[in-house]
Amino acid sequence: MAKRKASDASQQLQDFKARVGDVQQHLDKVLAEATPEKLTQMEPLMQAQVHGSLAQTMVTLFSMYLRAQGIDPEQHPVSKEQKRVSLYLSKVDQAANKLDLQNSKRTLDINVGAANRFISSAIPELTAEQRQKLKEAGKRHSTEKPSKRRKSDEKQLTAKGPTSAAAHAAALLDDLGSPPVS
Image (cartoon, rainbow, N blue to C red; front, side, top):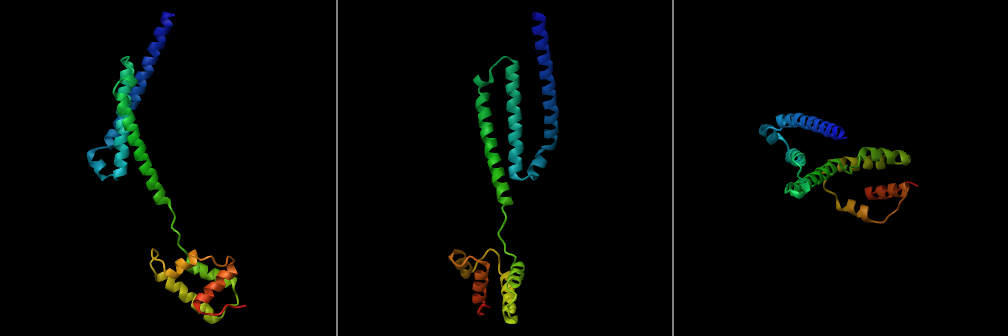
């Protein structure tokens, strides 16, 4: 039974050494890539992620060392450092998620040409004058800056008006100054 415990301990020690060796190889690769010159070229968020990962690695390795020495890492000041690094990494992750969300938000842009084609095909009885005014409205809208809205656009967005496509088309024609086609 004593031989069995010794062989188990020996096997655990070999596994521990192998894992430390794996960590060392990965750490060497990271440290080779994380030179000060390369870090200064990275964006601040990426720098924070690299520094946080390195700090987490160091704290974990030191905790492993303490365990190998028979010391409980939870009773050592390193546990406080572990919590601090984890908090830092969670803040970095929140910032990264926020940035990803900002970058992935689609902007609401209206394709005026497509809207005009849709209206033209939905109301085939448009007169030549009405079609021309529709084209002019599209050209006028496409030259405006997309970030600025006209007050009339905001009124249309906030007004509780008709909900059918025909009613919206009639309202558009009314805005263009032409009587709606019946």
